Amino acid sequence: MRLVNFIAGRIAVYVMVLAVGMTILFFVPRFAPTDPVDAMLAKIAVQSGYMDASQVDALRASLSDTFGLDGSLLEQYGAFLRRVFVEFDFGPSLSMYPTPVMELISNALPWTFGLLFSATIIAWVLGNFVGLLAGWKPNSNAGRAMEGLAICLYPIPYYIVALILSVLFSYVWAIFPLTTTIRGAPWSWDLVRSIVWNSFLPAMAIVITTFGWWIISVKAQTQALKEEEFVRYARLKGLSDARLLGRYILPNALLPQITFLALQIGLMFNGSLITEIIFDYPGLGLLIYKAVLQGDYNLLMGTISLSIVAVATATMIIDFLYPLIDPRIRHG
Amino acid sequence: MIEVDNVTLGYGSRNFITAVDGASMTIGRNEIVGVAGESGSGKSTLMRAIYGDFSTGLRLRSGRITATFPDRAPIDCSEMRKTWWQDISYVPQGSMSVLNPLMKVHKQLIDGLPKHKRKGDRRAIRRDLETFLAGLDLDPSVLDAYPHQLSGGMRQRVLVAIASYVGPHLILADEPTTALDVVVQKRILLMLVEIQRRLGNTLVLVSHDLGVHYQIADRLIIMFKGEVVETGPTDEIFANPKHEYTQRLIGSLPRLGTRKSTVTALRRATP
Image (cartoon, rainbow over all chains, first blue to last red; front, side, top):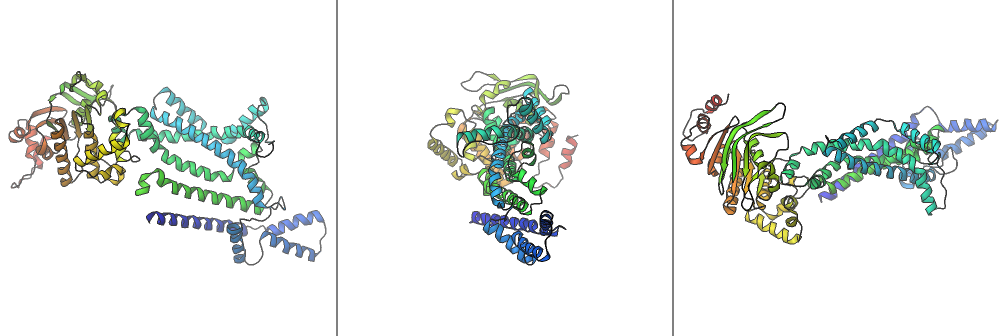
């Protein structure tokens, strides 16, 4: 019964977070001084030359309808919520009219997610492994070297690493492609190879810049845990180092790391703007970038909604998973 | 069983800080030895050295500690590690964080054992654990509990059970009743005595609480400022304390029928 209450409560919080997020998302652009219909009309007027007033009015009405700007603010709000939560429809893209926003997003999503997910998992596993060993023997040469490496890598801005990799491995030694071009029929080996080939450099750049942070954080955890009473007690029981690390330190050190990982996965839906620009990678980041540059309100609303939903969902999933990995929360 | 011969212990190498200064004592078979003394008297440091735990900067500057367990050649304390959780085990103070919070009690009961005893038929091990706990008047349901689900007293009893499940020749208990209420204290002391009687082994009990020693120790070792100031059978020491510190320590115990404040006696004794 307590479990049912917990799940129901958590889902209620989730729905509320989404509602608040979507409400803010709805109202903020409407307080902006620019009117997308006027902007569009101006654009059309420039292209088509003279239009008489009745034509302009008809166009204005039709555009207001397409953009969902008809009726009072409350009516618009209701229509917006219905479209977001019931129909999953953000209307057509304004800059790539008339392609629906959802189609653009669903084309870009697998790219971004595939790249960021694999890069984040690789960095997480590597970083935790190295950090655990570095924290276990912090005064050994290897431990010091690993910490030095992490401290050197961690503060380097991402775009520097990305540019260096791009210049070195696509320009000086043309091993990897400079911009992303994917070849191969859908669901073929050629396609997979092409994707891996094109994603290698951006993924490396992400791994290099993020895994320092994982090392530093898990190393601090490990060093703190080493001084814990239960680790000392287990050592006095005569447990080998391997079992001490594997059964006592690692599970306890990973708990906070799992939280961070899940949040990272939620944030992936924002795309990775700089990566995608530098490597011309057809993901969500590039899509958002274009939407901002071209004043594509619908596309912007669509991508931001997606990231609200993704972050809220990811945190909810952690909350549901946490009782499974931490007994203190399960029974507490 | 344990010979401590003129041992000086301390911490650090360049700035050596002495914690135990020229202590000697003998711990025999089949007895309960109480080690008493105030905080900082060196009793825990001496216990760590006997246990052979030289991990955090503890150093043996001079003297020898030798252990002679049945069926084993005498060994030096620097090699005690080989006997951990076989010939010797240890009961820590049962604080909140002394057990792994992510591991059920039954795993922590057996994970100090050698591999051939840990692995094998799970059901047989489980049955064995259940009968063992029942013998100690502990409910088998604690096996499936996580540490945070145990009360302070229960946690301490589990720690005693973990140390005695090994069936060792020597159990060191470091302040096992501190921070527990008197009723629970009594239960744990009875449990320790019961285990000692059953195994016929040796229990070394470290406590600053003379009342605890009075209840169960056969022999007492009194430490003061890093030195062993008095040893002898508990009854004799309580009846006729020889060292000035022991006299004041015993004088400070509250007694029925006396009204005089006894705190001043100790205050004078601890400069």
